[in-house]
Length: 264
Ligand SMILES: Nc1ncnc2c1ncn2[C@@H]1O[C@H](COP(=O)(O)OP(=O)(O)OP(=O)(O)O)[C@@H](O)[C@H]1O
Image (cartoon, rainbow, N blue to C red):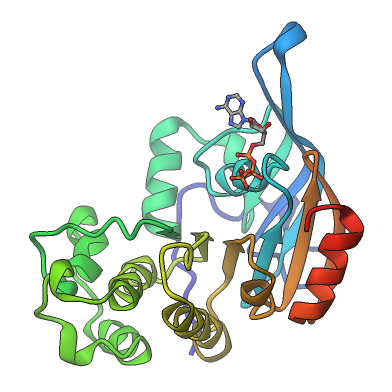
């Protein structure tokens, strides 16, 4: 049920293909650094980060405030550019793209879910979900639309406008919008931050199921150890560096690691 790979600009530079026969990660950073400013006031937001985000996995990114989580996500998503090192989406080196190509890459190959749902208030839930197709001038895949709507339990809410939906339903619409283009990676920045705990758990359960059942790759920034426990793995950042990676996280293991790393 995957088939989520769309051809995109600049794909498949032969030198980047995994010659060992292993699966190419959905995204990766190699010795990526991002420095803001220069001279005495320079801030090293990312410091030589090497990380791979495996396809069809749910990765959580954690770390104290200012540790570089958003910067890492923005660089992986082509919203920001590394100062040195490389970032790849599949086999595409993001630095090799023009601004226009990066914009198209974000539109065609990535999905985004933010803490604030960012839905258009005058559009129905269905129209909000289909917005990326409209913007790209692409005919929506009706079968995929039905799959996404069913997975997110939104079938009886499609004609409602955002103001007529609960926060949890609005965020599910935002997830639907992120999934509709069958992106290679969905980036979620504190997606449960504006939700009550029950709606937050439901949303995390939906993200988990789109990974398990639809083969979606999801990367989520979170401060919440309970949210991170829904992921397959957790990457911990401190001072712009990856300081720990955990497979099969539980809330308690994440809490203990946060305590040990001084980010609790
Ligand atoms: N545009 C920018 N200009 C200058 N400094 C920046 C910029 N963006 C981020 N920084 C700095 O880079 C560092 C990392 O910031 P980043 O937002 O990635 O951290 P974060 O882990 O996402 O933090 P939070 O959990 O508070 O959102 C911080 O010291 C921040 O002040």
